[in-house]
Length: 313
Image 1 (cartoon, one colour):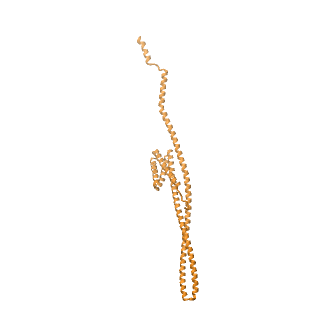
Image 2 (cartoon, rainbow, N blue to C red):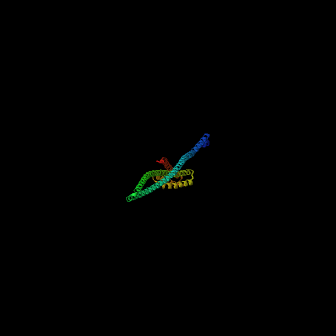
Image 3 (cartoon, one colour):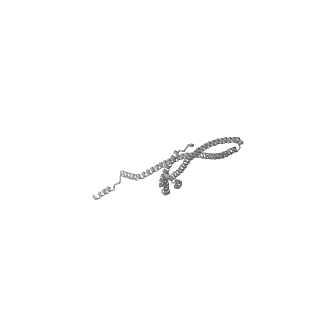
């Protein structure tokens, strides 16, 4: 009997029923464990949202900077074009003045030639008069009756000689004045030629600046296309910029040629990276754009500081 009564007690102690508090703690533990498993997911989602927001802000800032730069260079282009129109008008006026001066110089040369011919004729006339005087003097020896007439003729000839001498002196003075005017005209032509050469140099510099601005604008547009993931249009703009830059760099020397060579290298790297590595191409385009911006700023400063010699100096 003792064995039968103790056996049920052992069975009851080894298999107790779970209480309500234990079930609550188990549920709470599973809930905490599930929350801990979801924490990395929440962190990843928050990081993605933050990265997307920062990328959006950076993209807006980049577009704002590019638009401000484009507006500023548009204003510079308008100013440069107005200066080109002004310089072109000055060049036309200088050319017209040179043509007038050349015509006046030709007229002066013709007048001088006419005066030389008149002097030659006066010399021949004097020689003929001297021969006549000699003939008259010999005739007076053989013919006393004609001495008075010959004397009167001699006086007339002497008056003619005096008149011709006075005319020669007047013409010599006129020749000296014409020579002075001719030298003055030649000096003005030389001054105008110098001013014209300086203006042509400024026009060439302005043309070079416009060409470089076209390259800068094309590279900026290619950068925007890369931001929009439009690889085809970006590559087309890069090739266009390369073609214009190669033609311009072939005609340049010195520091400008070295700067353009750096831009060419970056454009070549960008062309090689497209379309397989747009990020590398974007970095190379950004470097090329910054180098072009620096060169363009330097050229604009040189054009604004250039001095044009005023007319008549």
